[in-house]
Structure formats: C-alpha cells, structure tokens
Image (cartoon, chains in turn brown, red):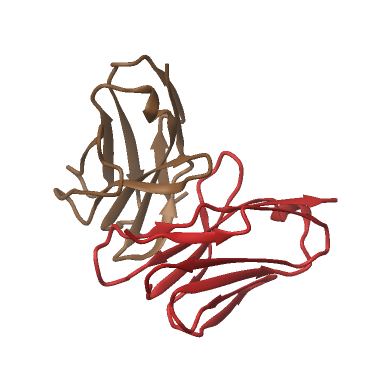
Length: 111
Length: 113
C-alpha cells in the first residue's frame, strides 16, 4: 500500500547511545517532516525537508540531525540520546504543502 | 511563535450525541486541517479547509474555516464508538515556509456505548 513507512516501530535506548529512524514514502512527495508527540503537547516539528538534499530546522531541532539523500527517504538521527527524547516520533510527507500523510510512528524510550 | 488553542481537551459523551470542538489562533492561517489519531497510529486527515468562511462536510463530520481566519471548528453528529480517538486541528500558511503546520494539543474523545 502506498504511504509513509517508519522503521523501527519501537526502540529502547540507553542514555548516550545513538540511533537512526528511517522514514520512507512511495508517493513521490517533495516535502517530508519529522514530528515528536508528547502527552498533552500535540505534535511538534523537529526538522523538515522541501526536497532531496535539503533540510531545515523546525520548532524543536536540538539533539537531532536529519538527512534527505534520496527523495523517498528522510532519516532522523539521535547522536547521543537523552531521557528527554523519550517520545513518539512521526514522519509525514506531502506534495507541495497540501494533504500531509503521516506514518504510524516510532515509540522511543531512552533509559 | 504561532500557537493554537484547542478546546475542549477531552470529552466524554453518550453514543448518539453531537460533538463540537474548536481551535483558535493568535495569528492568521490560510489553511485549516482537522486530523484524527487512533491509538498506536499516526494522525489521519479528516477535513481540509482552504478559504475563510468555508463549510465542508465529510460524512458525519462538518468543519468550518472561521471568517477571521483565526479559528475553526469541527462538529461530529450522532457519535458512535469508533469516533473514539484524539482530534487535532492544524493551521498552515500554504505558500510560505513548508514547515509551518502548527498543531493544536488535541481533543480526546471518549464515547459511552
């Protein structure tokens, strides 16, 4: 099925470990986004990309890095995980600003 | 920065009742979106509004883009158990920065059978 696929779905990290979350979309969307969702906070934008090879900071970018080497993939990296990064991470994509499609999320726990 | 105030934060209603929730913004948007999130899933788009005053329906759901462009509401008629979930409003200024989809904090809907 067409859509946005996130891997992994669950992960537990120790403080200081690093990891990469993968987002893949097969809709040929130009724009991709990473959000985090915390209880009572809604969704907050971490980083986004308006095309292959481009990235930009969102509302809460600190502690994260991203890369968009291929149009269909958007990677979110945590270089040194902290307990404050325990959250549910959502990737989304859209075609020129219309109709965001979200993945099903990655639940990350940092202990 | 821009903020959205979504209310109520939660609702607990009887099956068959109508539901209303709304969002207000401190600044103007040219697009309002309403999403629903089921447990363990990502948000799914319900209704998109692109013009001030626009009233759009999707089955039992009706949403309106406020005249001032600073607010929007969502109504659900004759609620059923599968309406349970978290509803998010989101505002965007299409044509500007492509990262500025601003979300409300959500309205959690629970339905008694």
